[in-house]
Image (cartoon, rainbow, N blue to C red):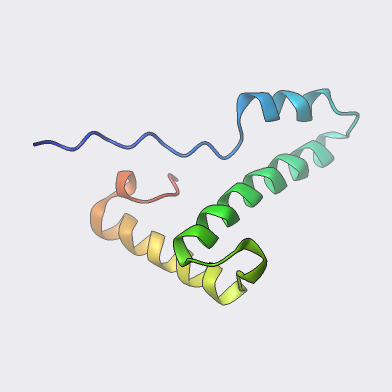
Length: 85
């Protein structure tokens, strides 16, 4: 039985991006807003993966998660990792 490839996680939906575009913000403020929204989504994924609430998530857990995701990317390929870059 072959596994279906997972669809990539969308860190910023088209609707969210459109809302940012409509906001009365400078280009740099829009970039930071998109980054913040995407970061929140990723932090939620990390907290769930670590089995803690978002409020309990520590910077050490974030670093460890990125190390793990990087290791998965190196050993199993980019499609197996959460972050696709």
